[in-house]
Length: 80
Image (tube, rainbow, N blue to C red; front, side):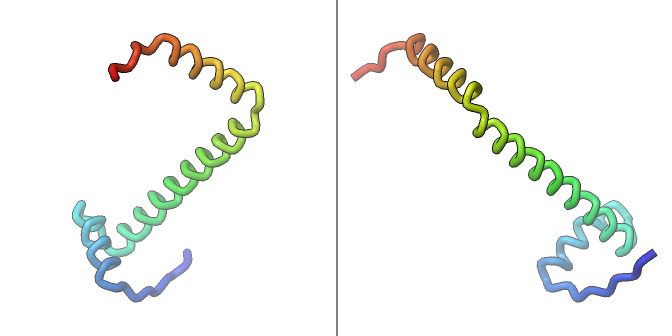
């Protein structure tokens, strides 16, 4: 196990109190917050990669263009 010593500013101290509200110790709260932050970053990274992959997929982009055109054709005329 690794020990970590940190200084908390007001914002971080307030955040720690939010996480500790469930009755966690400081150590449990920090471990929980780190795991949750890492999970969010993994999800965001996976979403960014999926967006990059889709943006590079010319066939998918063409299909989306056709769908947009079809949807525009189905839309009611705008009142002017």
